[in-house]
Structures are given as structure tokens and as C-alpha cells.
Length: 309
Image 1: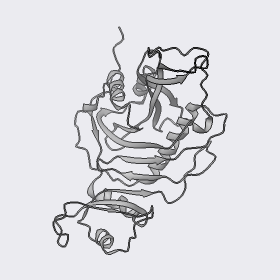
Image 2 (image 1 turned 30 degrees about the horizontal axis):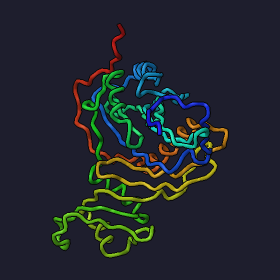
Image 3 (image 1 turned 30 degrees about the vertical axis):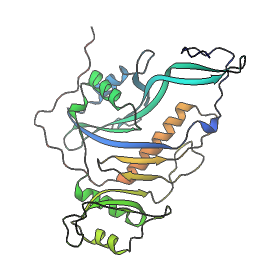
Image 4 (image 1 turned 180 degrees about the horizontal axis):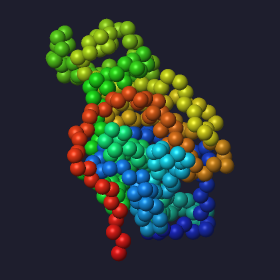
């Protein structure tokens, strides 16, 4: 059996992937970051133009979403490229052969550039799965001068998280609280209530009544579902979106497999996926200020472009 890895698949191997297997269930986590640099739209667009994903790069911008209104946020779809190993059965020998496929798109992320209306500083919303974050910060450092050390992950305030949870209190699957210092909770350090058989937790049980009535009980995270089905352009069906408010203040969205017209490409699938994630995140967070304040900076930094030799 030949186990040498090669980047080229010979012609006798035919790879077909049914369209209905293109996209399965995906978990998209959204995190918000503040920076100490001023928001400069022209500089951001110039930096993105230099950040395209081209052959030989590991990470970069695949697509920038055009907007008619210059006051709207700038959004881009980024991709992580790498290698993937396959085992294929040869039509000639009926034996498995091993291949390494190079330049495979392994993961995508969407980044939204916006301006803090109070401070005028750059804010980032990052949508993605488990992979690509280190490469994203490397790209931002190289093309914008904004590295991970220059960004502050925004955290929900205790009041903000409680307010958010109370909006979904009648459709909670799980809630984690920290009531150890409250009389009547014994020596419990953290309480974790879960529903059974996929149903919502009954908000009228005694413990849940205590959580909602006692504003001093700290809510750490919860799992819920948007109250109505979500729809996006190009989708053939509406979908229920479950989500988890994480302890680190990320919002994790469970996006089911989506059905698109068969004429749509894989890239179009990613676009619709992130559009749905963006709509869902905005429905969850709303217009209320839920995050802890970020300390001010009297001397904000300027976005910078890389020097061209």
C-alpha cells in the first residue's frame, strides 16, 4: 500500500460531493472587541485591500460586502487555508491511497468594523468557529497595526447580563448562577439548572422564582432560543436559532444546516450563514447597552498601514 502523500489527485479518482451535504450544523461564536485606535474608514478600506486571500497566503479577505451607505459598518469574510488529508479508493487497483490536498479552505470568519459612537474608536465584531483567530490577529497587526494586545474583549456587566437573561426567562434551557453568598443557598458555590428532554425550564419553580426576584444573585451564563424563526435572503426555510451566552461574554449560535437554491456556490453558502448569524446576534443583543464600560484613552492611537518598500 502506497502511503506517500502527494498534493495531486490523479484523474482516475473522481470526487463528488452532493449539494445537500455542503453545509451541516455550525456553531458560530460572536465576540465584541474595543480598541484604542481611532476609526478611520478610508484607512480600514485600504488595509482590507491589502489583506486579500491570494495563493501562497495562509489567511486573508475572501470578500468585502459592499454597502451603499458610507455610515454603515464594514464587513468582510475571511478564510483560513491549509492542508487536508484524504484516503481515496483507486478505481484501477481497488486499494486505498493516501493524499494530502494543499490550499484547502479550512475555516471562515466574518469581521465587522464599526465605530464607538461615544469615543470614536474602532470596535470589532468577530464571528467564527474554533479556527482562524490567531491568523486574524496576525492580519490585523500586519495591515492595521492592531494586534490582540491592542484589543479589549468586551464583557457583559452583571446588570446587563441579568437584563438580557430576563428577556429570555420564559424559554431557558439552562442557566448558571453564582449564589454562594446568599442566605438559603447553603454552601453551593455555583448552581447549574438544566431542562429535561429538550424542554424549557419552568420559570415558576421555586428556585427559578428566587433567581428572578433576587437581583443580587449573579447570572453567569444561560442557553435559550430566539422567540421566532429566523429567515435570510436566499434561504428556502426559516430556522429556530438556539444560543448560549458564554461566561466569557461570547454569544454562541447554533446554526442548523441551511438549504439554498442548488445554483448557489459554497461561497454563497458562507455569506448566507454569516448573514443569518449577524441577524440573530442583533436580535439577541438588541439596542440596550449590556457591556462593561471600557476605560477611556486621552491619546487614542491612529490606524496605520504597512510600509511599502
